[in-house]
Length: 351
Ligand code: SF4
Ligand code: SF4
Image (cartoon, rainbow, N blue to C red; front, side, top):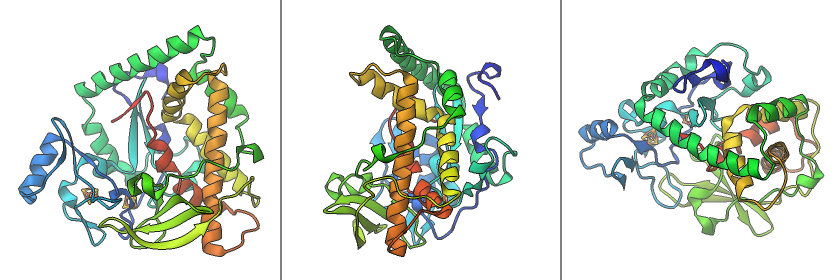
């Protein structure tokens, strides 16, 4: 689907193509969140749990997560207590929609129920029936309110575009994509060490999480001498500390095939509107004369380096010494990174 052939309320689903999804009943990773709740969803939930209290005010309401990095209050023994009435972010996960110049759906690749092999077959294949329910929920919510949000997002983007044009730094997204897709940027030694994750003092709810086949997720936290690996408790706080692993100082070695996997992930990011959504406001706020393509190139290298650093820490944590990262390590790095990067604010909105 091209931008020219769409109306604003068409949903671009190209980035869902080829992905197969099967939720893992032992996971619960996406429940370490405070999902937004619409008015009709609140009413349904109150019919089941009359005592339920919501956070926020007005139309902006959410189900509170337990304090100190805990899971949503409705998660019990790895199961949702209101599965049939769960709110839309839960019904739609692992799909997320960027509201910007258009509505673009993408898959949250941190979800262990997603088969990452589709990254090797970009935009090929059909929409999988395994994502039909999630996609159906997304489509149901697209309406007049969405049109207003697109208009607001466009106004924010236009302001940034005007500012960057005045400075001689503006380049259209499609031109930047075309140029960088011909030769995807790769992380190198200059991109290391990567930025540390937040520390425990910043709040456990801010730490990047991943699923490790345990009853609750593992988090990276910046610690003394490296990154702390912390197993979080669903009720809040740290269930167990698994020690500290120093992140790589320079580019880790990669086994054959691993570099290709990383490249496919960066190609996926280049196609995401959320990439430009995050980069453009940073550019506009920076005292710099680099054009959009230079910023996007740098951003892709940073994303790649972050994946490699997280893959390397995970590999050394589970295997001790690591000579070179494997293809599976790259998938582990992607899963420990993707949600974190998608959560960054930008000029766009989230459906
Ligand atoms: S993160 Fe994915 S696999 Fe895990 S519970 Fe959520 S949807 Fe299921
Ligand atoms: S409502 Fe249910 S599915 Fe949604 S975050 Fe809470 S426990 Fe998880």
